[in-house]
Length: 500
Image (cartoon, rainbow, N blue to C red):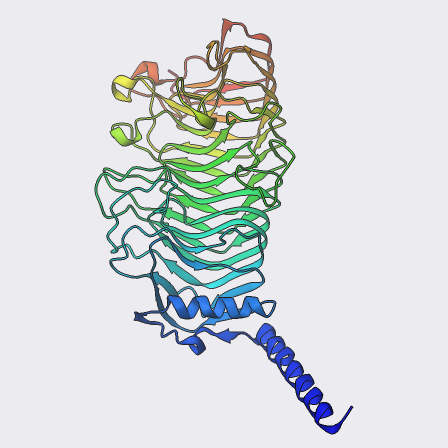
């Protein structure tokens, strides 16, 4: 090797070493998005700078893109910014760093999206994603290009979303088919879009997959007379945990489905149903329902198994007279299929087994006895299992039901030949150690129920209602409609001192 060759080799080696060193420094320290021309001044379009920073960090194997204090304006008709694996996006704090949609962008699609990739080892930390409520939008764009989704993870593994504020008015604030994702200490604020007549099914957080945690978050919905956001949190899949979240102002606080998630070809989940999910220690303040368990019209053999619903406080605040809330209200209930509906809204084929509903408190702000919802004749339900599918081995223990004008617990499996063609039953239900306070009818076993034990419950009325029919006259109602092996033992009834 001559001197020139040695020198070229040494230069090449040093350049390679320098590139490695620079890459290592970027990984452990982070790069500043302003190095790529971002201004963060609330005026300049910073979209190209942000994307260039993400792409560079991804190209060297990963690292952190840092957003100093400021408001970073982004814009685009559909995909605004593409996410990459092994990249962390980090701001100076929720109140200090904001990424915001530009004025007059119109019906945009996604602020951030993992587009046609399996997103791995991604983090979003310490900033705000703002849809720009003043941006004029013109369509609902239900699940189409104008979704207005702030963060679409698509299929993702090992994700952390922490200390992020989402200001949104579209279909989803956060959506993903995830494995081992954590969403924690975030704020979600939903406000109806600016145009009148908006109507679409929103789930502010939609997360499917397995082994995910949604913990210590606050979701708040604003509404107006012609629009109320539908759902705070929606989930599918296995071994997901929802702990210590506060969900306020949605029609339905949470939906849990037994489907493992659809449209996840990169990381398919072969195990059907939804198993071992936990919904615990949350505060749900909603207008129509607290928790809906949804047995979608899905593949045969799909079960929701061993779902644990424990120690939640559910407060139903919907007012009966308003047309927008004129639906049967319940704390925890099963979704009922709709005759003539297509897809997963139709006949409910998913089954439920081993559900445990324990230590929850379900309270109704406006007590709605039968007939007080106008001509619709709807009423309150603490727990409503009005089923079209098999429901087995359910525990309903140590819960408290307060101010329920209808039924504290209502069990029924429909005889409808279309919605329940196999005449499936509700079987093996343990209802014990619950307190029913000012519930007109604490427990109703209506039809197609087998092996129900009602033991050691307290039925308490604290006051006398002016309308005699609103008072507790029957504690346990059991009709002769194909109900068998119903046990009622050791329950206690307590009336006010002045009696009724």
